[in-house]
Image (tube, rainbow, N blue to C red; front, side, top):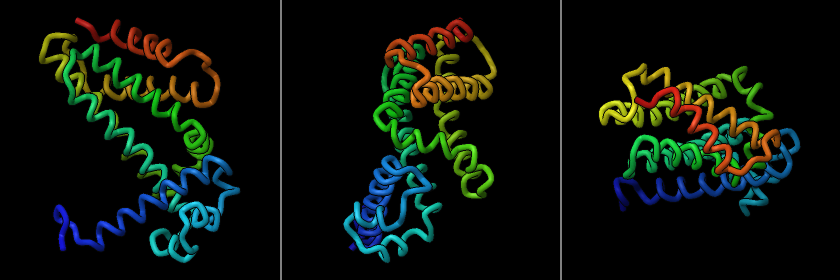
Amino acid sequence: MPVMGKTRKDVVSEFRRSELLTAARTVFSKKGYHDATIDDIAEIAEVAKGTVYLYYKSKKEIYLEALRFGIETLNSELLLRASGPGSCLEKLRILTATKMEYFEENRDFFNIYYSELGKLPSHPAGLELVKDLYFKQAKIFARLLREGVRRGEIRNLNVEKTAFAIADLTRDVTTQRVLGFSKASVKSDTDFVVDFIWKGIAR
């Protein structure tokens, strides 16, 4: 019987995929991409190795999907926070802190992400993944900026370019944190990023 437009088979399939992706993130975080195996993922997920291959053709495919799953979860959280109440400045601070905290809580996994990032563009699926998630996050910031312009909180500017600049800056500071280059607190780095951005866009 359909559940919210989905069949029981669809629900079971989504649940199984979610379990496998969670297990994959755990394995990749502990062992790294190269040392991780499908057997490891199957063991953590408590399924047969063949079950993993029913959903994913290779380690590369499940890695990319685990990465997508992780960043789409972040983007969903950012979109939720952007839709909440508050001024443009307040929301910018919330989104920046949310992004940093998310990477902080998943530091091991995203350490693997950054170590593999340089290799992903050479892989067609990897290139599409990086572009897709990058543009989605920039759109969230663009939505926030348009709202700020409409309310008169920030000056009239090129929303799209500014959104990409903000996405880049927050990514770079987050990267420093994940790689251990920044020892500052989340609040301190959030204050730095937001103050830097706000001086350039405030009316």
